[in-house]
Image (cartoon, rainbow, N blue to C red; front, side, top):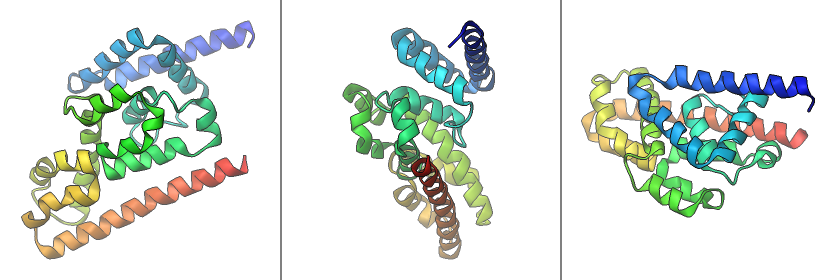
Length: 212
């Protein structure tokens, strides 16, 4: 990498780091910025590698909820650039955690420090719990609206902790008796379509990797 490329990379890294602070630096998400600052100080080399990856590839690995994707890349240090390019492991991790909840990350324990995984799954103040809760809230509210289920916000609050820990299939059981059987069936149908769409995206990306 020549001097120009070095300078360009530095500018890109600075830009993306600023974007993280601008986009997620609101009072509601200040805990995210605090986590980034602490992580940068304690794990500087890996933080820089993830930041460099972001500068180099842009939004390629940020998914539909970038703030969660950034944290997954930071926490799962075992998923390095080579694995990202040559395998579907990160896509599979994303699909698993956003469908089966926080407890499911034990499947990927080879790629994360033991103490860290225990801290994340056993603490409701952990960064992953907070981010997943926000992710599920966003998706659940949309599904409830599509299913014409009223009191969506109240039902979200009721279901979110279970959803965050155990994913869709178990999490939704907590609101089954709070709506009509007909509406709940519609909700499950909408959920199935949503999950199938996600699975198709993973399959497509896997095919692209195999062809490279």
